[in-house]
Each structure stands twice: as structure tokens, then as C-alpha cells.
Image (cartoon, rainbow, N blue to C red; front, top):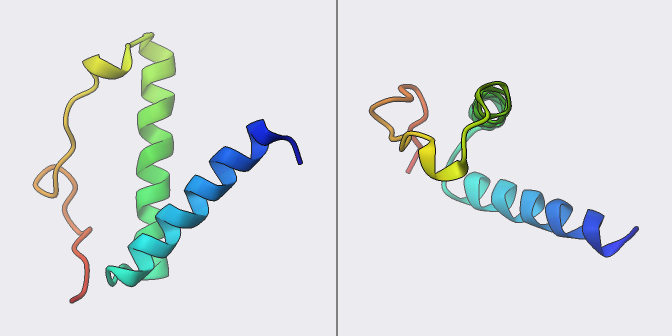
Length: 68
């Protein structure tokens, strides 16, 4: 596996581990992944720069509350 492929894989595994350790369920993580894909898709469609993307908060994404 090349270095270019290892970076995203390591980041994804780290992000997943942090979400699980914060109490997110597998179902919630699927929802988060779906939301990330939707954001990237919209950005590609609109040709937006990353700085132009609106800040996403728990108020704009209800249902994604970690269990403590």
C-alpha cells in the first residue's frame, strides 16, 4: 500500500476509534459517514472551496449525540 493510501486509512481508523470511545453507536457512525459524503458531494457539485462550507454543529445535525 502506498503512502498516499495509508494516510486516509489511518485517519479513518483513528476517527472511528475516537467516535466509538466517545460513545457513538455503529448506526450513528454510519450516519456521520453518510453526512460527510453528502457534504463532499455538495462541495464537488457547487465547486465550493473548503472555507466556503458552512460550520456544522450538533444543532444542525440532530440525532448525533454521543452516549456518555
